[in-house]
Every structure is written in structure tokens, then in C-alpha cells.
Amino acid sequence: MFGEAGCLVAEAAHLAVWLVGLFGIVVTVCVCVAKMVIHDTVAYDEAFVWRRKLPPELKSKR
Image (cartoon, rainbow, N blue to C red; front, side, top):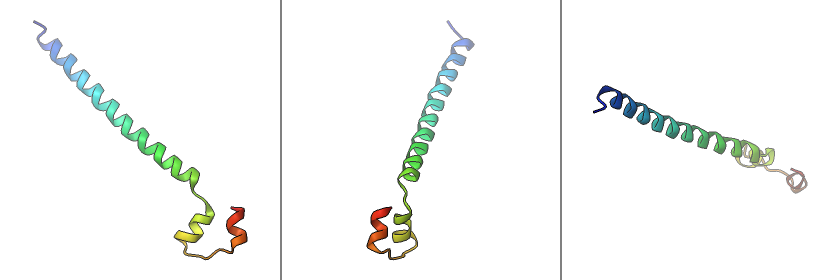
């Protein structure tokens, strides 16, 4: 009944679902990276990344 036009509509719907899913994954990754960057502190980096021992008075200030 619909022929080729129905096939094009189905392909467009399939493409739209894939694009929405891809956009959702990209947004999720961006939000997770943003949270990680916002909550990152120099004290954490010095203690765990750079393996430096901080004095207690500096840990409380940061």
C-alpha cells in the first residue's frame, strides 16, 4: 500500500532512534566528566596522584 514511501519513513524512524540513543550516551559521558572535574581538588591530586604527603593544616584549607 505505501510502497517505497513507507520504507523511507521506517528508515527515518530507525535513524532518529539511533541518533537519540547516541545523543543520550554523549550527554551522559559529558555529565560524568563535568562532575569529575568539578569535584576534583588539588588536595586529592597531591595525596593520590602525585603521592605527596600534605600537612594536616593544608588538608583542611582545601
